[in-house]
Image (cartoon, rainbow, N blue to C red; front, top):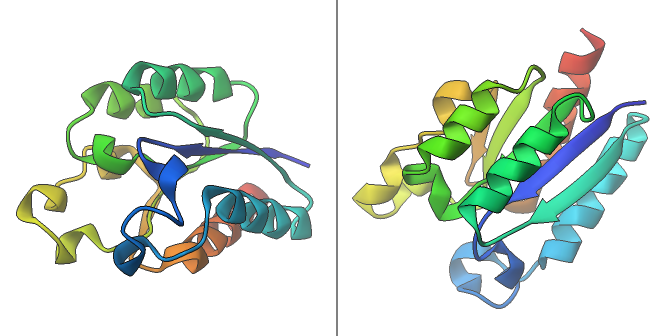
Length: 145
């Protein structure tokens, strides 16, 4: 059994309320429950964390070192400029899957760059809640490979 760290950046605490035409009506609790259920099917557990503060997300990534076997991260707006998150993730030894509910490449031009993607094992974008379930599946396969 492995621990998967599920990390969420700014404004994701407003899922279900914020721009439902883009992000849908599922809440952060719904996302956490779906990831927890998917992980349990593979014998894994989930430690979830959300913050609106860049430093707190860096602290959570660093705290996952030596504890979690993998990270699923939706850094929110930090995706596009937070090099401190890039650097913290680069020091994590396990698989990292970057997820985005919407497709940043189909939105404003400033969303087209990810500073997280270069240090992620893979990225899943635009698939909403299903993308998180796919992230769990990808991690489970990586952990058993």
